[in-house]
Amino acid sequence: MIPVLALVVGVVLGIVFGPTVPGWLEPYLPIAVVAALDAVFGGVRAKLDGIFDDQQFVISFISNVLVAALIVYLGDQLGVGGQLSTGVVVVLGVRIFGNVAAIRRHLFRA
Amino acid sequence: MTDDPRDGGRPAEPTKPARRPNPGRPNPNRPAPTPDPGPDEATVRLSPVTPSTTGEPSPQKPEPRPDPAASEDLARPEDLARPEDLARPERQARPEDLARPEDLARPEDLARPERQAQPEDLARPERQAQPEGPARPEGVARPEDVETTREAAERGAGEATVALPRPEHSEDATVTPPPVSDEGEPGPDADPAPAGPARKRRGTAGVVILVLLALLGFTLAVQLRGKSVDSDLAAMREDDLVRLQSDLQGQEDRLQREIASLEDSQRQLQSGAQGRQAALEEASKRADELAILAGTAAARGPGLTIRFIAGPKAIEASDILNAVQELRGADAEAMQIAGVDGTTVRIVASTYFVDADGGLEVSGKRLTGPYTITVIGDPPTMRTALNIPDGLVPSIKGDGGNVIVDEHDTVDVTAIAEPVNLKHAKPVS
Image (tube, rainbow over all chains, first blue to last red; front, side, top):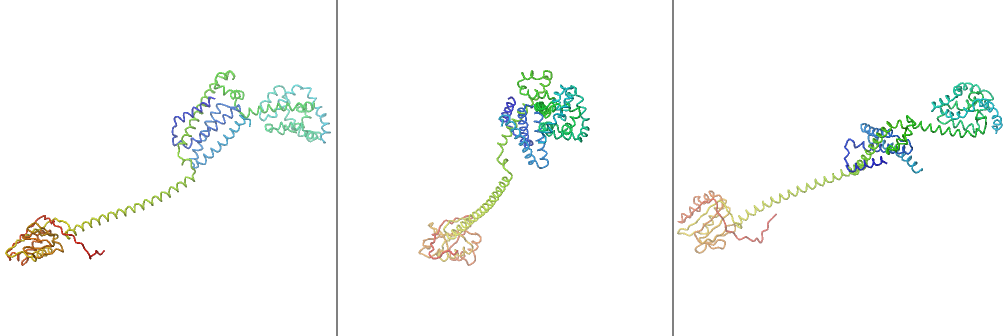
């Protein structure tokens, strides 16, 4: 419950302050957000599975974000930033779908 | 089919070896099924250690021994019969159950060879023979055991897959995280001893999680807002952008051409306007000049006034005409003649002079002397022209009259001739 509140607080802060994204961060932020979403969904799934672990969640969250950003950065340096970010999004999207399916099974038994 | 007779015979055989060892260790038999997970040894090798400590060191150590024996035994006809017996559904079921991936580590040991050897080897047979021998009732019971072993194995597997360093604590941890937020209850639930540091860690981890989630929400909102603020172009695909660009390029070209043509026409119009203006100025200037020559406009400029004073002989029209001709020859540009009464007549191309009584008739107007001619032109030239020897002035002076010529910087020719209405001549252009 409190984590959800934290999420809502973050959203509200983002809407209230609405800072502009600095240019150097612009390519990485969307990917980082998607990676973080993946970690969050994985955390929810683990919670429902009863194997949630705080440390693991924190580590997976941070490492997900960093690795995603790193991959995009590497892609930019190699000149395939667009394709690589697409690939990252696809992979993360597949994972999110899997996690959501598991959550769905937990919640609706279907 | 063929199994039935053999099976019928078989139970008797295994029971003998089975029961021999059995009475010796009736109790260990039941622990034996629990070690059955022992087949899981691949994953849980540590666990069998406990059964060994409980009292069955022999069955475990002997295992390697029977193997060679088993291989030898396999050759025996008796043994050969057993493998077939093993083909019974019940027995087959076990090896399969045992054959779980975890067990795969020792498929050979667990599978036929051992069992084939077991009945003969007293060491091992104990386990497997016992169930077989005492019989089918026990065999019936086994599935349960197997199930329990399965459950145990699954638990073990679950723990193994969870792979948490401390399985016990980890389970508590997984259960308690929600309480972490509630702070009050979970503490007591968790192990009292590790609770202190663990709770601290959990607390910091929880705070970090909250911060991370808040950060995620923040960036999410920022990103969404940024995207919505962004222009539509950012969301367009590359092909669309290229097409758009080419469209704009074409539009720009068209507009550039239009600008060029418009500038061209503007230049033309400007030059036309200038030309017309110049022509107009030229024409008006020319019209003014012509008006002066035609006597339809007043004129001013440097010139002379010439006063004719009659002597004993009156001034004749021919004298005036001579004077006018001389002045025209000296480039006079505008002239008028005035009588003594102030009547003035502009002298133009069509002006005529006729002698009249006591005076002159100039273009229908009657003038009386003395006459004054006002002329605009180059004064010295005209004066010279008038004073040439045997010219106008000497001849009039010879007749006893007088001619007074005065030079002026500006003289006004104000008389205006009647405009002429041409009836026949038309301009040719």
